[in-house]
Image 1 (cartoon, rainbow, N blue to C red):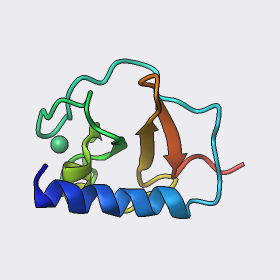
Image 2: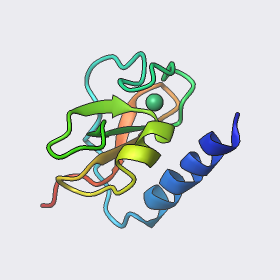
Image 3: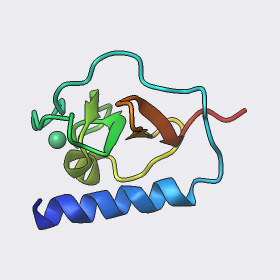
Length: 101
Ligand SMILES: [Zn+2]
C-alpha cells in the first residue's frame, strides 16, 4: 500500500471516529466493484465515499475510493459526501455524513 493510500485512509478513519452520530440502518444497496474515478477494485478497501468525483462546480457524484475522495471530496457531511465502512460480511455501512434527524 502506497503512502498516499495510507494518508487517505487515516484521514477518513479520523472522520469516522469523530462522528458522534450513527446510522445503524443505513447501508449501501447495490454492488460497487470499482472506484468510479480511478477504477481501483473496491473489494479490498475499508472505506468508500459517496460524493463529488471531480473538481469543478456542480461535479458528478460517484462511489469512490479514499485516494480519489481525499482529492475531490475530503469533507464529509450531509449534502457534501457520505462515508461508508465495510463490515465483516462485506456490507458498506454509513459511518459519517448521514442525514440529520
Ligand atoms: Zn479512486
